[in-house]
Structure formats: structure tokens, C-alpha cells
Image 1: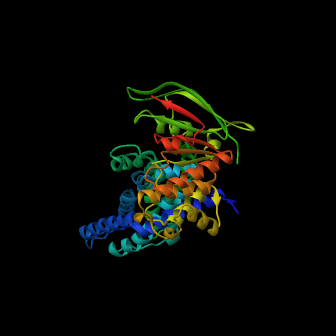
Image 2: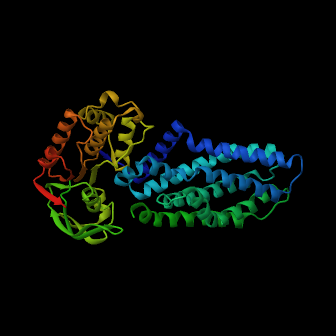
Image 3: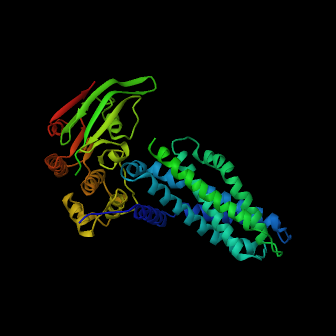
Length: 225
Length: 207
């Protein structure tokens, strides 16, 4: 008996395949974690026992997260290109399930990276979190934005030369609003006084949704042309 | 299975200054088996990709028709199956996992026993739990055939399907093509192998 699978099931299959191949190769997660650990150690050793302002700590946290993400997130399509499986994906898979499956995988990777990085960052840099819920929401919104943008751009650069450099360069302007709002909100989470964070947080989620919509519209053209 | 006719008009393809075809015309009726032959570099594989909608021609149009009328490229893509050298599987997954995955994303959810029986048909059942890292080129070719049989598409694009296969593998390909023709599936075959050309009821020669 043959059963037709739905779009959600296809997205689920792609996410599971990504996690399965990553679990067996440990390429992306390895480079993400090692990069973040190295950067964090360097920052922590340089700063020593100095007390930093919440804004400076927030900037450092997002810089470490951003550059670690750049080291691993472009692999979602580059690996398919180098192994030749991208042709099989194009031949048998629809564009939208592939986009959303890959986006979810990058989102999972980023959240794993954040879960690994955040406690270490707080411990190494002796940082207090006064508004944990806000910090978790910022991480959720920031990681969503980074995952959407990096997934779309990773699909754009697969035909280009110097893919790594190009990926970071073209990601930066699109990720800048996400980073600026994340830094602003993370500063609020590291500050004891209550601050009005609702508006920038809402903006961040709306920006994520807009980027997700744009990616969905553009991806059909990128994938088949 | 949907019956699909294909028509292409004034197809031109150039890679920089190198012109492959100036104005290629033709049509394939549903259920036909067409062989495309020609020397190396004549553009056999490129023509297959152009007709499949995987590569854009420099000029010209391709139209697809079903019984209901004109078929969009998007709908046509859902009816195409491939056995070409470009098709690759995931080395870190087993044969069965690869088959499950690609069948699933193509829209087909198959029960375990059906996957097993297809793998048995292509003589890979004893290797179904092995990762593809250990597979030879011939075994990978058999897995491509298994995927083609699993997805059950109306139009098959085959590019030298018997390459790297032993005698029993070649017999499998021949049997699959004959069965597909009997089922009314359209087959486009790029080849220089005389034995493969014999499967076709029509031959296009590219110079």
C-alpha cells in the first residue's frame, strides 16, 4: 500500500535526515562548539577579573554566537553540493519542504549552541542574569532570525566561488537588525532595573516572520534556477 | 499513472561560445521509449536535463501535456524519475534509510515490507542495512533503480543506465524498462550502448 506523504511529513523527514547525518559525522556541531569555546576562552582570558557593563557583555555574547554560527550554518547546502546529493534532492524533493527542513535543522543547531554557550559565558565572564525569561525569548527570536537568513543565503552561494567569505559578507547586512535588537534586549536581561523590552522583542519576531516569508517566496526560484 | 506527452520546439543550448544545438524539435508521446544517441560532448545528457526542466535552454520552449491539458513544469517535475550519473545518495545512511528518505520527500510513504521487496528485486536486500560508504558504483546504480521503482513516476530520464553494472544488473535494467513501457510510462534514454538503444522504439541522433 502506498500512502502519499504531506508537506509537514516531508519537512520532518528532511530534519531527521539532517540530524541523523550530523550525528554520524559530527561535522557542523563539532566546528560550532569548538569555535565558540575557543572564542569564549580567548575573551575570558583577556578580560580576566574585570567587571564589564551589561551592554559590553551583551555585545560579546552575540559576537561569539554570531561568528560561531557563521562557522557551521552554511553547511546545510554546501555539503549537499560537495557530495552531489543536491541533484537528487532537486530531482525528488519539493523546494518548500527542503527550505523549512533545513531551516529547522539550523534552528536546532543554533539552540544547541546557545544552550552550550550561555552557561559557559555566564560562568567565565561572571555575569548575572536578572531577567531569564526575557533572555530565553531573545535567544529564541535571535536564533530564529539567524537560522532563516543563513539557510536562505547558504542556498544562494552554492554555485559561487569563495563560498565561506561570501556567506559571511552577504549575511552581515541582513543579520545586522537581528544582532542590534538582540544586543539591546540582552543588555536589558543583564540589567537589574526593569526595562521596556516588549516593543523591540515584538519587532524581532516580526522581522523573523518577514524573513521567513521572503525566504519562502524566493526559494522556489533559487532552488530550480 | 498519469499519461504525459512532451513537445519541444527550437531548443538551443550554448555554453559560452560552444553551441550544442541550434534548433532542436521533437515530441514524445506517452508510453514511448526514445533513445538519444551521439558522440561524447554532443549534448545527450544536457538534452535530458533540458526536457526534465533541470537545465534551462538558451532558447526554445518545452511543453508538457496530460489528458487534462497543459501541465506546468512544477506538476511535470512531480512525475519524473531519474537514473543518471549525477544522482547521489547519502554515504552516512544505509541503503534502506536512503530509499525511505528520498521516497518520502518525493511524496511516497512506503511500508517496510515494500521497501524490502524492492531492494530484493534489485538484489540489494542483503546489503540493506549497510551504509553506502561501502557500496560499489554498481551497487549504487542498483539503488538508483530501486528508487526509480519506488517512486513510480510517469516519465523516466535514464542516462547510460547500464553503466557500471554487471550482467545481472543489465538484465534488471532491461526488465525494468520493458515493464515501464508496458505500463505506458515514457522513457527518455541517453546512451551510446547498442544494447540499450535496442530498447527504444525511436532514436534521436545528435551530431
